Structure formats: structure tokens, C-alpha cells
Amino acid sequence: MIKRKSVIQVKDLVAKYGDDIILDRISFDVYEGEIFAVLGGSGSGKSTLLKHLIGLLQPYSGQVIIDGDDIANCDEKKFQAILRKIGVLYQSAALFGSMTLAENIAMPIFEYTDLPKISVDNLVKMKLDLVHLDGYENHLPSEISGGMKKRAGLARAMALNPKILFFDEPSAGLDPVTSAELDNLIVNLNRNLKTTMIIITHELQSIFAVAHRVILLHRSNRGIIAEGDPQYLRDHSKNLFVKQFFNRLAGDNTVD
Amino acid sequence: MRKSEDLQSCRYEVSQSEDGSMTLHIQGRMDASSAGRMIEGVKSLLKDRLPSSLTVDLEKVTYLDDFGALVLVELKYLMTGAKDKLYLTNASDKVKDVLSILNFDTIGERVSAPKKRSPNIFTRLGEGVFRQASDLTFTFAFIGSVCLSLLYVCLHPKSLRTNDTFLNMEKMGVDALPIVGLISFLLGLIMAFMSSVQLRQFGANIYVASLVSLAMVRELGPIMTAIIVAGRSGSAFAAEIGTMKISEEVDALFTMGFDPTRFLVVPRIVASVIVVPFLTLFSDLFAIVGGLVVGVSMLDLTANAYVAQTIKTLTLFDVFWGFLKSGVFAVLITMVGCLRGFQVKGGAAGVGRATTSAVVSSIFLIILSDSIFAIILRYWG
Ligand SMILES: Nc1ncnc2c1ncn2[C@@H]1O[C@H](COP(=O)(O)OP(=O)(O)OP(=O)(O)O)[C@@H](O)[C@H]1O
Ligand SMILES: [Mg+2]
Image (cartoon, rainbow over all chains, first blue to last red):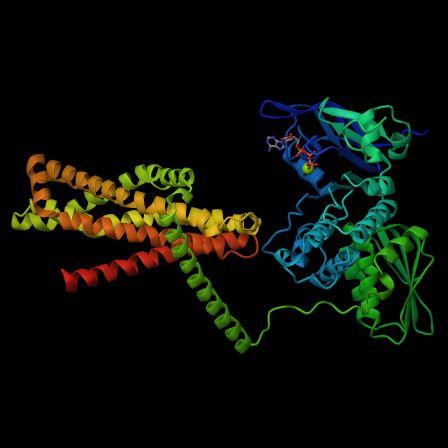
């Protein structure tokens, strides 16, 4: 097997809130063009990990290297350059409430490209169409549903076609049909634009449908308890929790 | 081949045949970095004369994303004026995939959503009137529900959330004491200083004490305190309740069986009615001390004489009147702050508007009700 290029390298990352250690010396790589899923029970530190990957929180120790640059120890200019390479869909979509959906998406495009106004409008329309929100250009975020907000947030995260896309629970709050469509969209974007994607999710179906590789976090060891292909882990893992997680079994001793 | 242009990583060549059709050969990466210049280029190319048909050869395109597709979309829009349309040839599978998930084939046929906001002035006027009317109804409903809740709490004193009330008393009163004290002290200082310049000419230095104490206790103490409380706490109420409203916390309270008014508004009203009059009393006191400092240091008055004159001037009624006024101001500030909070719609900007509006409306209501008090006193006292 050929050695693939890593776009994200996490080395011995320790994440703390005050004195609470949430993640204890975890290391993993995400390769170029990969769909990488971060799994784990509620409260296992998935969102915390994401915040470290995108530079919102500083690691207590260890390194997060994005495309060759250490995100925690780099100058302001480098950091801005890294930010241009990433797009983030937040757990609560984080759309700007005072702007319409079209303005939300157009904002980064105006800022970072030299496209004329009419072209930006057309582009925004295409982006909204991509997430099945055509016709909602002039709605405010407060006027659309939770699932629609999520999709609009996705369109905004993709506004500049970043090299790496982060999703915090993309399909939470979506109906099964839209959720499956979103999976297709993710696979399509990944294949055609070669976007590397890091997805935080609980949805087993979508994990099996899209993820190439996963890591599974667990509270017990404040770190990774399994890493690899999701199908393989489901069928061959020896670890009880991994089995329970991928086969959707209850946590008590119903497993023989 | 007639024209060629360099566009960093992306370039195109144009060939034209005799029957008026044109072919664009595009090569390289069609992405965000090249899209702007590509669009300008093709626009100026097609501006003079539209070809009868346009074929775009995508054979050498190595990468295409939606910014690249945008160039093709712009071409398509430009070509809608021509007899014949736009043809794409030699697109690789990847490019075709991207174009198909973007629904490129149907893109020109879709109608865009109509812009909101009717430009008609009469429609806007009508909307404005309806909005004001519904605001007014909401205000009356709110006042009604506050009265009912207060009544309920009077009848069932146990249902008052005492912890919350004490917390609010601390935030409104104790925490405001330093700033109220400082401002009142300076106000007393200034008043004594300004009036002494005039009164000294008549040798009536001692009346500085009367002027400062009477003006402060009857008018300025309650008003200054109320304005500070409006700025500190009225705005905080609006922001807090507004944020709770947009994050559906108010709805959660409601479905859990709590009456949002009784839960949020009543403790704040009770706290403010208790605390603001005392704050006013402190304000009066600090102002008198401020006046005393000027009197003793600049007007050759003794502290004893100053205090004696102050006590001689003030009646119990004056103090009571100031107390009453500040109680009324407190209710107004709290009601307006909470009302504006409950009226918040939309997102963060709505909270900002509510906060501004809470402070502005409270200050207006404070001055208005103070005038009413003045009139009542004039004809009654
Ligand atoms: N701002 C914070 N301050 C202190 N502790 C926090 C903070 N945010 C999260 N935590 C703690 O960190 C742990 C991990 O939280 P995190 O939000 O990363 O979980 P998660 O895996 O994203 O869960 P979920 O699937 O429910 O979103 C939790 O135990 C939580 O109590
Ligand atoms: Mg989370």
C-alpha cells in the first residue's frame, strides 16, 4: 500500500478544561481526500477534539498539524492561511441571525474572491440548490427550521470550497431522506472536489455509508479505543464497547 | 486560434469558424482563484458580438468546482440571447459529476426567489401600523399578565422565587452602590459649587445646604438613580430574557408548566421595588456629603451648621415623596426591560435592539412620570 499524504496530524494531544482532562495524549492522522469520522458516546470529547483541530482551543500539550503547519504555534499570518483551508459546520449551524441565508453564504465569497456581485448571486444560488434550499435566499435564519439551518450552515461552510471540511453532527435534526441525500452529497463532494472531511456523528447508517476510516473515543481511557474501517470494526472487534456501538446494543449485559 | 489569455493556472483559447460559431478551449484548474478573471474575460469576449453557437471544450480541464461551474453558468446566461445555445464537449467523468450535482442543465430555467420587502409606501405604512397595533396589544397583555402574577404571588407568598429575588436585589442594588454613590457625590459637589457662586453675592451661603438637599431628595436623587438602574439593570433584563426567548428557553419554561411572567418578571419587580428606593436614599446621602465638602472647604460653613440647615429644610414628606417616586420608577424600568426582552424576535441583532429600546423607553418613561408627579404635587400639595 502506498503511503498517503496526511493533511491533519494529531500528536499526543492533551485537552483540558481547567483541571478536567478530557482527552489524554491521543494521536491520529487524517489522510488527503479521506472521509474520516470521529465517533464516541455523548460527552466523550468529540466536540472538544473538533475545537482543538480548528484552533478554537489551545492544546494543553501536544500538537495539531494542519497541512504541515502547527495550528497552536504559528504566527497570525500562517493561522489565517490555515483558516482559509478549512470550513466548519457547527453543531448548532451558527448562521448569522441578522443576515439572510444568501448574505450568510455570500459574505466569505465577497471577502476572499474578486467575483462581481451578479456572479456571486448566481454562485450562492447554486450552493443553496446543492443543499436543496433553493428559493430560501431571502429568508432569515430565524424563519427556517432546524434541519434547514443545518443545511444552510453546510452551504456556508462550503462557500469557498475549502480543502478540509469539518462537520459537527451534520445529520442530527434531519429527516432520513434528507439525511441520506446529505450523505450522497458528502460522498460526491469528496470524490469530485477531493475535499478531506472530518465528520462527528452518531448516525450508524451514515457512518457505514460515507466514512472511510473512523476513530472511536471513550470516556474510560479519555482517548481512542478503536481506529479503522467501520465495517471491519463492527464485524471483528474484540472490544465489548466497540461491538455495542457499531451494532447498536444497549450498554448493560444483554450481550452474551 | 485568435486569442489566448493567461489566467494563472487556468487559461482559454478561442477559435471561430465561418458560420459564426465559436469554440472555447479551456485548460487547467477552474476554481475560486481563477473564476473572477475568467468571467471578466469571457464577458468582454462575448460583449461585442454573440456567436451563433458556443461550444466549450473541457478536455484539458484538470479540476472543476462550483466556482468553475459558475464560469460556465455565466456563459450560459450570456448565450440565452443567441439563437443557439451552449454546448459542452469532452468533459471528463469527474467534471460531468460535478455539473450534474449542481444541476447544471436546468440552471437557467429556475426562477429565483422574489426579493422580499415591498417597495410600495402604502403597504409599508400599513404593515407599520399593524405592527404597532400588535405591539400595543402585546404590551397590554403583558401588563395584564404581570398584574395577575403579582396578585397570585400576593395571595400565595410561597410561590415567590425568593432565591432569585435576593440574587436580583444584589445585582440591582448592592452592585450598583459604588457607581450611584460616586455619581451622586459628584453631583452634590457640582450643585453646591454652582449655586454658591450666586448665593455668595447675597451672603446667603447657608442656603447652599437647603438647595442641594431639597433638589436632590425631591427630584435629582430619584431620577439619577433611576437612570443608572435603567442603564445597568433594565438593559440586562432585556438582554437576558431576549436571549432566553430566542434560544427557546422561555418556551421550555412554558411547557414545563411555569408561567414565564411569574418565573422571570415577578422576582425582578419585587427586588427592584425594594432595592431602588434604598439606592435613592443612598444617592441623596452622598449628594449631601458632596455639598458639605464644598460648603466646609469653600464657603466657610461649619459642618454642624450645614447639617442643621439640611435637617431644617427637609420634611419627612419630601423624603417619602422621593421614596414613592423611585418605587414607581423601579416598576417602570423592570416592566419595560422584561417586556422588551419578551418582544425579541430573530437572533442576536434582535437582542441588541431590545436592549437599546429598553434603556431609551425607560428613561423616557422616568422623565414622563416625574413630570406627572410634579403636576400632582402642584395641585395637591
Ligand atoms: N466549556 C466547557 N467547560 C468545561 N467542561 C466542558 C466544556 N465543554 C465540554 N466540557 C466537558 O467535556 C466533556 C466532553 O464534552 P464534548 O462537548 O466534547 O462532548 P461530545 O463528545 O461532543 O458530546 P455530544 O455527543 O453530546 O456532543 C464533557 O464531559 C463536558 O462536561
Ligand atoms: Mg458535541
